[in-house]
Image 1 (cartoon, rainbow, N blue to C red):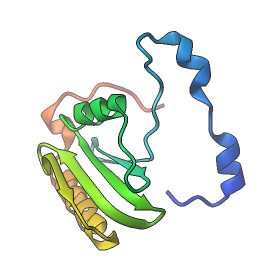
Image 2 (cartoon, rainbow, N blue to C red):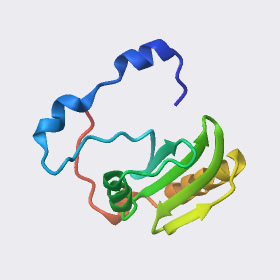
Image 3 (cartoon, rainbow, N blue to C red):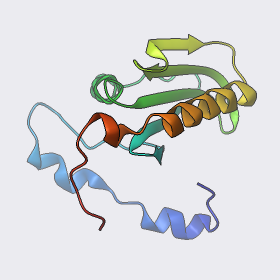
Image 4 (cartoon, helix red, strand yellow):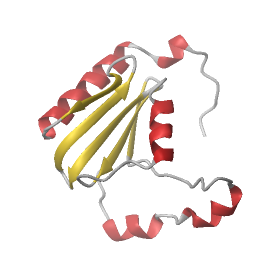
Length: 133
């Protein structure tokens, strides 16, 4: 996603704190930094600053997502990746880490995912239920 208007983008961000009272056990809403869909296959992208640990709840979310889809977690300063974790049993396994890494490593793995997703429609493996919004 290219952000064409940063001010508009920032204005549109929601503060989900109003939902905190909806959950027990300290559960909070999380965000995902990017998502790509190809033939009902999903690739979730998450970015973290260097050495930032993924919160426990978000780790569980990514592990669950990777059971049926794929997750790529990238650590580094903005557009300067240092480490990447690839998750998704069908393509990347349970959690392959590439360290050090660069933009080309990330591009390579996302192209690899896209080529795989293009040849393996998710709806052929599971009944697709839903209608366009």
